[in-house]
Amino acid sequence: MTSKPAVSCSVVLASKTSAIEGCCDSILSKLKSSDFSQDDIFAVHLALQEAFINALKHGNKMDPRKQIKVDYSVNAKKIEVFLTDEGDGFNPASIADPRCGENLYKSYGRGLFLIRSYMDVVEFSRRGNSVHMVKYKKQGQ
Figure 1 (cartoon, rainbow, N blue to C red):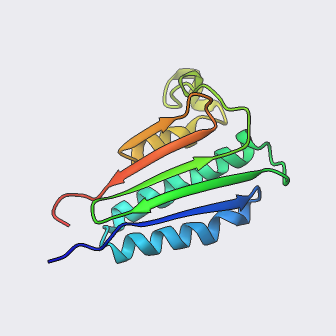
Figure 2: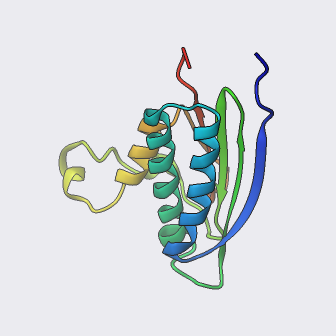
């Protein structure tokens, strides 16, 4: 059985909430055609939405003149995504665990927690304005 070749794409999106929909649909379609499980597709979808919202709100500060770049690659074993905003960046270590103590009532930090929970690899650029996410296809698929 031959495996499908990797599919790679680079997209620049406007800083508006509706911009992620078409990009997400395209990525999820590629995951389906590469036989990723529904669980994997859900995980990637959630992580993409959270990363995009973080880039939009915290990175680009809802500035419609700024853009968000999404580079991704899908192959038979994994999806890899780089999402970069035009903001100043942040230190991911400064975001407290939203499950602990007084953090339970804070209105931020949950998106990053969800991304880390659902993706297999989550890395940030030194500047903190780009996230690299990887999801490996579950074994037996």
